[in-house]
Length: 333
Image (cartoon, rainbow, N blue to C red; front, top):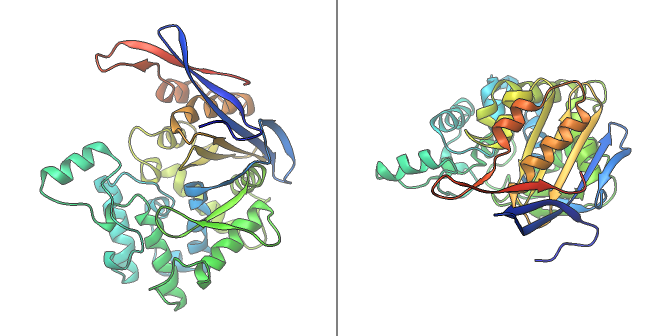
């Protein structure tokens, strides 16, 4: 696959002293006013946010009042933002959301797939089980959506359709944070709900506002504060063990909030710095995300050490014998 127009090399893959592959992409760093303050490649490149939009989808459940009515815990709010691995703590949190609002797993609009967390997948199959809707990495998001519909008295059978009042409310949230106006396009995400299509600069602006109190759209201050705090307090609920998103929140959750999206997307907001970052790897390969995001955080967090995050998430390339055979090298950063 060739690089899309505007993208530049960001990560080179070296093996045994020779260049093997190159990951192209684009980066936008924006402030809370929507000004592009740093870019590589095309900062205005349009892409689907995919799961990077989940904090805004979860925030809507808080804003509409469902979180208070059903007394969702911070861990339950975090799993609403999750691309989870179906570890036991994930399944328990999603099941609790459903029980509190009186819904069932059969009402989840996402389809089943095997757990993303390999030990959880192995345990499921070892026990003779098979993947259920609860195991879908987006089941927390869908449970939160069902709760919102039940709270508002909206239909639940079609809550994932773009014309449903819930999806319209979520879109209003997303676009208010991103500064998007006018007619907009949405796609269909892997779990069946709408996924937002916007420029990297707009996504970076949304995350800058998400992370920084006092810069959020009118009426969204409390909901945003609660979602950011829930993600920081429960990193494993937002992703799963061994994932970059979990490491980021574990090591730097008081300074950064962030969420991965499929096809090489990662967005982050720097708390108290009025800065948001959006990254797109053009070939969709997530292995290029870690070194790029670590370098960007080193550049924009300034006095905060990123060393622990780098040590946990940026690794050499090893073969199956455990030998170091290569590395990922940054380009244009």
